[in-house]
Length: 224
Image (cartoon, rainbow, N blue to C red; front, side, top):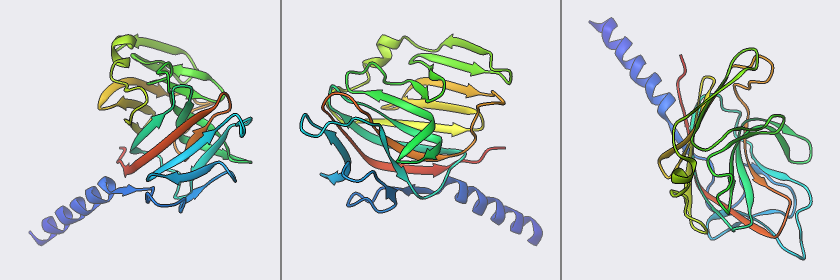
């Protein structure tokens, strides 16, 4: 009986460890993040980057979380974009010099065009809104519909706060917008799949734009 009790306690403790949540942005400053000089700040409790006619962004840069390289996890992020903005949340990515990254991205844009897409720096847009995409070990892509892209886009609130929830578990990556499933991507490609990596927020070059992120909650998940 004592042995059974010990096993149960261990199982509960292990489960609690995997379910533990942490808010990886303190809402006050850039502590815990690595930022390109002059581009990121905290405004109204949100991580903020902005380009203007007087200060255009000519090269992509990423605000990189320094707390680790998660493998199996769920991340929830509130975001707000100006209509001209193009941004994204990097997951399972490689940190590159000069605040660059390479890897999977939960894509987004202020006009809604890229909402609910999975992007990859080397492979482009690899999963669209309303799609379930599987890539096998040889790189062959199979795609099926899981929703109407136009109907799903109606869940996006232009110029207002929205919430992305991204789940990475095993080879599978799923994006939810405001608790509605947008797309699902499974990567079994032996040459390009990444099982872990950095989390980062994108500042994209282009026209004047403003991007903001807050309430960034990371939860570890167990993968068998």
